[in-house]
Length: 257
Image (cartoon, rainbow, N blue to C red; front, side, top):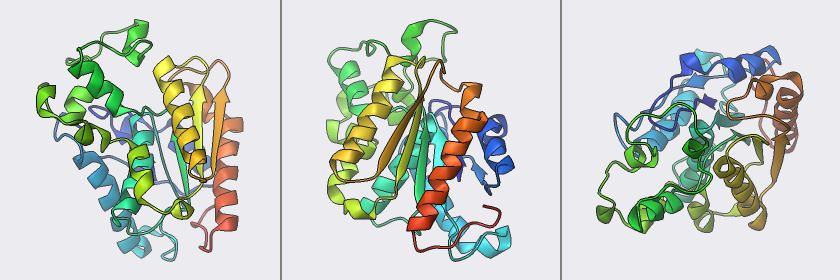
């Protein structure tokens, strides 16, 4: 299952087909999915949608031509979608809301750390140095920081740190059994923003610190949403990650893998 990016507030599966198509050509059955955008409904509707989709795929596996004994081999996403994939697994496990446990997670150049966003707005409202929008280029939609629509308000005096932290996959690690976590593959580009590279490295470190299996790959000269991520070598790494997870997980493969 693949989740598109777009800063949680825009994007669509139809415009995010490069990686899913590359995976499909490599023999992986892919469900390319949408979720509620924060311009429609703030967090946690987006992660609730992901958890509901996992349950839907399990319940309708036969109709969709997916092996009913293993409806989700892997869950992954790019940018905001990668964040939601990781969050759905940790929050879903911690709250016992996963209809089935994915055998593997893949996160492409994903953000993290909503607490730092919260603190930057609260004390005082300044951008995080090296943030994604600090590198120039086209001005993003207003509000400039995607965390504002993510949390659902510009009044950060009405938001607690605990509420801000709920969207951080790391927060839920303390409330689950690390042995239940599937293996993670995190991919980032050397030319991406300092914020994204920091996020992937931090998430990798957090997973390793609790004893979970995590692999971090940095693609040389690749930027955010770079075509290099759908090149044969990175896609081969993803397919290998899925095959390794399948080999160590007592579930059958998705048809086509």
